[in-house]
Length: 490
Image (cartoon, rainbow, N blue to C red; front, side):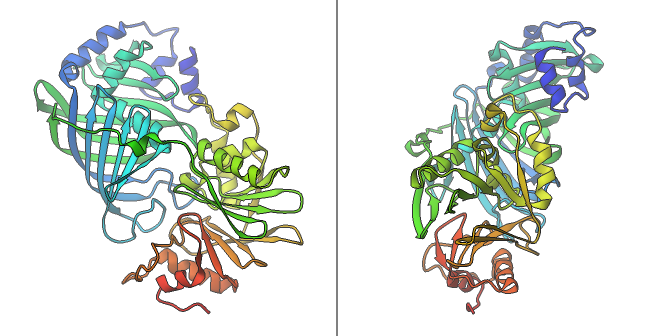
């Protein structure tokens, strides 16, 4: 078995056409160049430089399951428009979506539609909201992967890779393997008619490590200019569905202008600190916040978000605030991937991970998966995670500063959501239950269910909260939470 097939075997992907790649001793070689040339001719990839297509159907929000290890929450994709320039490796994705089930994360409103706009160009990714671009470095790997596993993208990427190898598949098909070093590996099943029918790929995720993706393409039709395009696209990621889309419109070689804004080029992580109490700092400067708590002989870091880059920047900043004290505890509020993407980084730092008990077995399983395509800090350090489980309540810290952790019960966001309370300072640290709007924003006509749930939990636990340190947004008095729910703080 070659090294590539071994990686796939360890990722649990040796099924269907990929199994043929692993059986190197018995499967005859094919000329990858000839197979790809036939596929290029059949799909019209050679004459396709730019592409725009519109889809609609069902989606699922990857990494935002209500329960750890559960299926991704379902959403309705009213419109997905992708514009691609294969020459520059640039893609724009415009999405109009709404929730199809109430539980789970994703940052989407519980009612109504939301519009998202994201870009990738080479090694740069950014989002646009309200006309304002913002860098999105965590999205680079996924968006680059999605661009180059489109049917025509896969053919072009395999031709350029210099790593392509081909073997026969079933029913006259060919299976071509290739990789984009440090980004993903893939095997494309190319049917006897030269059209890609399935792409099995593996790309690195900050939580799951090397992550299995299967994308199938069906019902190819003429799109004009000698180009054929599939009218049905399905995808699974990490073992669960993420896409089931019908293509409604295809434009071949449209004029596209997708310049990289200056804001997208500044990918350096920015961490700011606000001292909110003696020995307590609110660490912001990005889309996700963390909180640093000083104890007598150690530091506690609440939340290690996004990925290595963000969490390492937070850790470095924390060490600068309190030199000489180690970060021995990292509190993870819940398993959603944007909040858990830096847990591996904290493990590499030597911290014990404090999280809800139901997360522990899940993290132990996924952290044991290979992480070879783009090894992260934990993989490079060779460290194993240590966990401390929280049930409904756990008190840590020391006599001078107790730290109380509570499960946020009954909410729609995550079954394992924790909040952190500092009783002496009357500070509440929470994630996703309440994201403060801009100052002086009037309360919504219908209160957000997550906001209401947080109020209910504060009152159930009889917490004397004065200020909220949200892991998105700004520090606010608890009165702002109550105002958002149409209530008055007790």
